[in-house]
Length: 422
Ligand SMILES: Nc1ncnc2c1ncn2[C@@H]1O[C@H](COP(=O)(O)OP(=O)(O)O)[C@@H](O)[C@H]1O
Ligand SMILES: N[C@@H](CC(=O)OP(=O)(O)O)C(=O)O
Image (cartoon, rainbow, N blue to C red):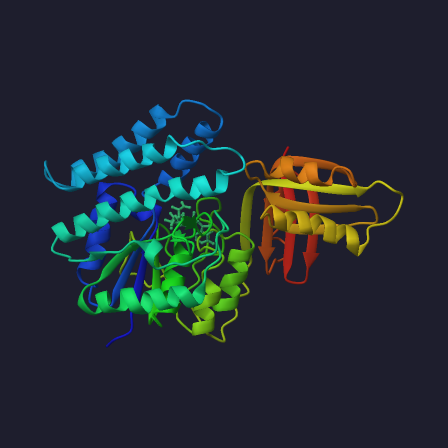
């Protein structure tokens, strides 16, 4: 049997009815057996579910938000299906289940588990709609609940994959189906060993494609995006970007590590280990080659700009007239780990440790509470972290025009700057 091929379609590629039709057109001449399709929630559904969750958490009314979300999905269905189609009661049913979950109590203590029970509804809705539409177009696919495949620990919202169990599930449950029909499943979601829903971290559907690929010894993974492939900067933020036709696994992984959001950072390593190529292609121009990420001797040295927004710069100053030692860094990192926060940048001086972290619900206040007795802590919110790989002398100044620089760090191959709009 030929090797499995995996296609992943993210939120932008299923954001409305024309997008779903376009997805079907992409599959029309490409679909065959031994084919897995991974879909994310439609458009910005996950963000909307997060809004509903935070309204619920703060005892505010979310009925307007949830009825909007329902109308959004029903409007897409109205444009795709004839009246009376089975999809309509299915969507109604998902929203009944969603409200059932939302009627349960939530607190800061059970928030992460609660979040994972609710947030996966986006992927459930999307995968049902896409599956029904493909079948209505004579593109027969089987629907698979990803929570029966992707086995994780119970680290809710940031669950870690149990690779052995996931591989066993894929081989025993998915492989026999794939011999008959292509299978469509959800990205981003999994379940722990007790069957409780978990998620792999925001934007984790790319990672799902990679997990399934390694568990099935796939031939390739293709992720379909609204850009021509991987570029040397986000084209929505920067002009005159350049497409990489190919990238070495490590170079692509490095870009994602610093925040190039076109690929989820965990996606590449499993594929690199298994030698499975990753294609990033445009769903708007599917005939174009896009970017191939694979084992290659080619080293790209084009200046590459990565911008992470909504960053917080936190500085910890020792209080006892000593200097910064390893134990202080350890203390800060220990708390970051407990809070599942990553330092996107770290700088130490004689008496201060400065870190840059993503802005995340509750996290800053928890970090401050834990460390306020040992350090004088100051922070600045709403910052940009700019990383330039392979910078040229003229790469940086224009990026700082109109900005104040709060922190800067450079090596031979990289410059990182924390900036704030003047
Ligand atoms: N270096 C880059 N090359 C291409 N796109 C990038 C890059 N960095 C960021 N992006 C952004 O990534 C987006 C695609 O990723 P994403 O929105 O997560 O897709 P989806 O959710 O549909 O899977 C693009 O629209 C683009 O704005
Ligand atoms: N829907 C989830 C998972 C995901 O990966 O989505 P996308 O493929 O649209 O980035 C999220 O928005 O986080």
